[in-house]
Amino acid sequence: QSASIPDDLKFEKDIAQVEDSSRPNVNISIIYFEDVSTETILDNNEYRSVNQLETMQNGNEDVKAQIKHQLDYQYPYVNDTKKPSKQSVSELKRQYETEESGTSYERVRQYRIGFSTYERPKFLSEQGKRKANEIGTLMHTVMQHLPFKKERISEVELHQYIDGLIDKHIIEADAKKDIRMDEIMTFINSELYSIIAEAEQVYRELPFV
Image (tube, rainbow, N blue to C red; front, top):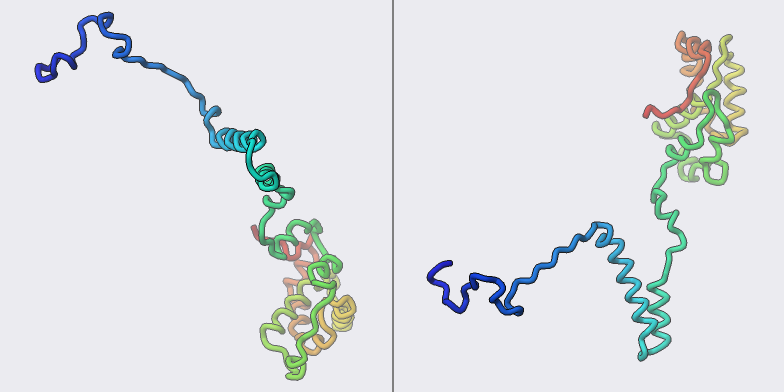
C-alpha cells in the first residue's frame, strides 16, 4: 500500500480483523430484460397508481372516481388507428379491381360522389367552350372505355357508344360536341387498334407498380 495513505485508512492484512461495518459487501443480481422492459414498467406504474388510488383514505371521492376512470380508460377504436389517414381513389380502385378486361360502368360510377358526374359551373357553360385540360380529361374517359372488336367499330357504332356513356352519366350530355371523333376513328382504323382487338385479354387502367 502507498506510504502516503494514513495508517487508519489502510486495509488490515487480514480481512478477519476488520470490523463487520467496514467490510465490503457485494451482491450480484441477474436481471432479465423482460423484467425491466418499458411496457412492464408502465404496467407496474399504472397498477401502483390505481392501487394507491383505491386504498387512499382521504380525498374527494368524485375526483378519485374521475382519475380512476381516466387511468382505466381503453380506447375503443384501436383497430382504426392502424388504418391509413389518407387513401386515394387510385388505391381504392386497386383494392377492388379484379376484372382483367372490359370495363364495369358500375365500378367507374362508384368513385363518383352521388353516382353521377358534376355539372359544369354555369359561368363555364356560358362560355360555351371547354378548356384544353377539360377536353383532355374527356378524351381520356372516352378512350378508357372504348370497345375493341376484331372487325373494328364503325363511325355509327362510335356515336352509339358515346351516347351510351352519356346515358350512364359517365360523361356530360353537352360533352359530345367536344369529342374529337376524327382522331378516335383514326385510332380505330390503325394497326395498333387491330393488335389490341385481337389480343386474348385486354387490361385497362392497371397500375404499373
